[in-house]
Amino acid sequence: DLGIDENTVVMFTSDNGHHNEGGHNPARFDPNGPLRGMKRDLYEGGIRVPLIARWPGQTKPNTISNHIGYFGDLMGTVAELAGAQAPLECDTVSFAPSLLGQPAKQHSHAYLYWEFYERGSKQAVRAGDWKAIRMPMFTGKTELYNLALDLGEANNLAAQHPEIVSQMEAMMKDAHAPSPNWKPRGTVSPKQPEPGDGKPRF
Image: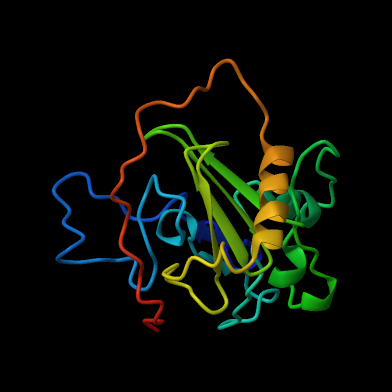
């Protein structure tokens, strides 16, 4: 009605994977398909989400980008599209080049980091195709996966690549910011989500 749809960028995404609350039974219907885990897991089923954008005249329909980012990148992106600059202290990488069909100009994060304090605590880091998960934080054994070859996180490669594990643990240490307001709660369950089959559904 306002006549602004042809001059507006609309982005749709989610903050996590599916959950099992409210009577949902993932054993009967698993919307994560090839991915392992769900909300509150740091496996891909808990943190990997799509972002869908529509921007007539700017973003070519049916464009697919493999750029990896996180919610904080919306700040840098919207700032760039508005002709502004995000605060320098913010950890944000604009994905405006991907929206504008300029992948050669797209910058990436050196790595992405996650923490979760419930269920005994866990942390994860992704650098390129490598993904590391540690439960509990700081003291647990680190799992290592190559997402390019193992999207379902079924094959823990930590024993085969100790040097990469060390690099990923250094990233975890560097990214963690201690806070008196956040302390691990509960215990890590010995039964973790089953690996996904890694097979694309589309």
